[in-house]
Length: 379
Length: 113
Image (cartoon, rainbow over all chains, first blue to last red; front, side, top):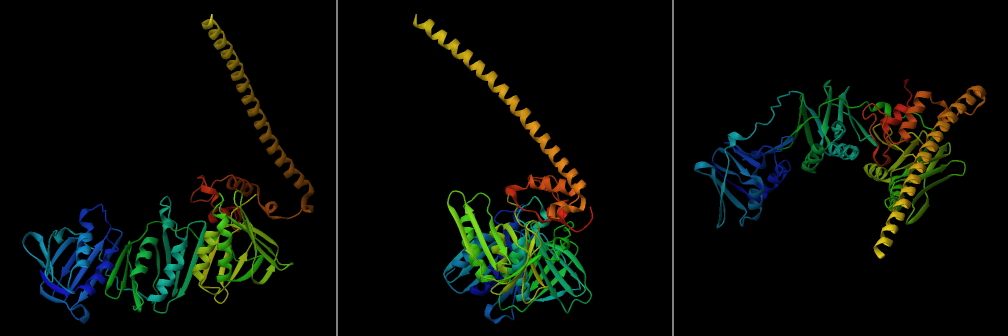
């Protein structure tokens, strides 16, 4: 096997693939990077058994200046190979595999010899030959991911909640995540669903990695789902992830439909206020801030106190406060995450009582995006 | 002479300690009894209040807790004591008084128990 390639282009692809490679792996060969050279292109593969990423550089890509002399396969230690490639002197590099998986990497006057591994020992990637695919605009997929993964649980004690629940039905995609303290739900109309129906849970970690390889120049991402794997195709990159097994809790019933107190805020202003209040709440043992809304007096005030440090009180800027008087406490960190996910816009907050979860929705689009926060009891 | 003095002192000290120990045990028992009585009175009190409410009937105010059924009130009490009452984590501790949306749904939700 022998090929030469432009190093800058190769490094870009290598970086994408290396996201899947862990420094420690249960199967030693998974710490390696698989390089497969065919007549038409070079395919790099990295995997940690949960996530696998495969990226192909084709000969038709002019920037890559790929020149294939002899096809073949090899597995190289990913970390060292990556470091070596990044530090080579010239822009063009050549990789040659000789007898006994001895691999020579040359660039300019520099020449490295690396011991490779037999590529036949590398696990096969899951075969996903599903005909049906869902095509999503890349920027919207990235947005959905960033809006939902904030609510994913990081506690392994409840594995099912470490994923995002994806439900596709009736030309609608629903993404929900909750760690039982807060919940985030995003809806999206899809016009190329062709009557597809899916009900899967994708690990939050996989989605976070996926959103890092979705670059701004990409337009669309294809989604293929099988029983226990999902495949995202983003341009030349194929991203495989394991699905979580089990039933996701029924989250529909968590979302209250009627409200006794509603109020509207500008996210940036409220975020700044909550951030100020959380300065003191972080110092106290129970990290909570208190919000008091009085529709009659047209007042909204946020309080926080730390017995050792002191306390803070701030009148909030708001619009359209209606309903009953309310006194509620919550964790400001959940509020901050939720507010950031909306971006700079106006939101409507709806409370049912001081004991029940409250919801945040964008004022202009109340249907498609909802954040829910569970209050903390204080007595 | 000095040695005997020391021995006497030790013995006196031992006696004092023994009485103190007895006192301590006695106080502990008393405290346990008081606590027991206290919780009994608490339960009795809630029962009496419930009875009073029953007698007053619809005259009473209709706030959030009063609308809850007995079983839901029990769940609410458990939740307030720091335990999960949701189907997913029933009985496990709520770390750092973390709120749980599933528990609140079980306690206050619209569905029938």
